[in-house]
Image (tube, rainbow, N blue to C red; front, top):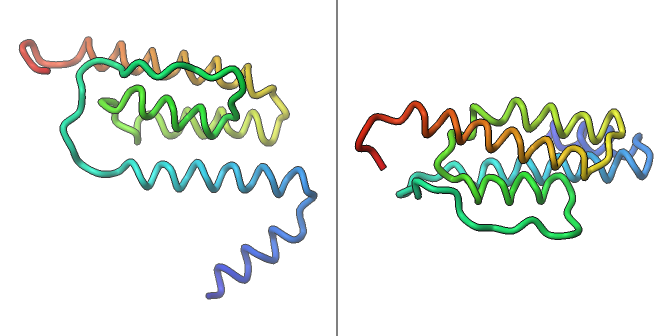
Length: 120
């Protein structure tokens, strides 16, 4: 209860733009929680196209769905850093999303290079 009151107080102290950024980040964190379920994972990336208009949170969600075989904890730090670049430092969403795409591709390359021979 105390946490929610503190969060609400902090939220109200923010400008409308910062409030929107905080909500985007909260959506990102919730989506990360939702994907922490165990199931059979594909060995190849899924063909999920990048929409013409996409915010950073939606891009992270799309990339996590595209690369479900990757360990989210390994990507989380880099994805969070990109989110910070966008929300705090004002880097354009398209530039951040381009970098997120490169991060996911790089992690996928490491994933396929380090798999045991004959596995998935």
